[in-house]
Length: 213
Image (cartoon, rainbow, N blue to C red; front, side, top):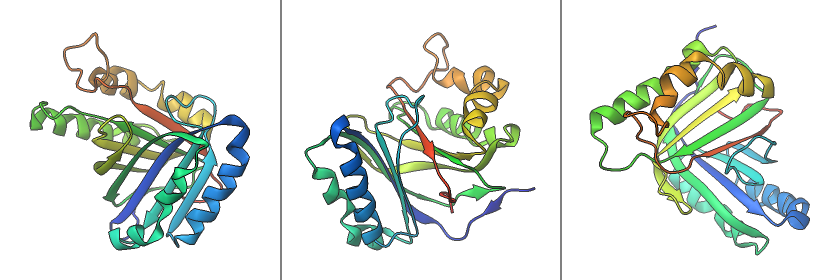
């Protein structure tokens, strides 16, 4: 099935939250209420799965028709809860591609330093974007430049996917030759091609509905 674009570009907001363990159920419920109150096109607020790296305890992903709708939501006010000890996040725009249904949403936040030449950044983006061509367990995806970064790192890119299931992420994706033989060189300090030098945030969770749409 060929990939299909899902309508006009939307504004997306992803937040990865570290939360005091004993407070996580309360915070999760409060964030779900705050997300729905903002009337987003899509709202995902879920605990992260084991295997996430620097991905927080709760993953939030919201989609809005435009920046004004996001600004009216006041969702970020809910992140002032004292039980939330750290937030990494991005706000960005784009149009996802879809070719099927997934049950796992994953977000990768990363930073490319500003001194990296534009042609190398373009080559990096091209190789990331071609991964769904080879990994059939990716059912929807979006690679976007970041408009606004939140946290200790000035994130420049977010690469999102929906996967068939956790095995589709941990096996066919992470272990595919296109990953370790091609894309990993941009992250590997043992190669001269490395451009992603800061730690990345790799976060994923279960979902029972489309996220990238």
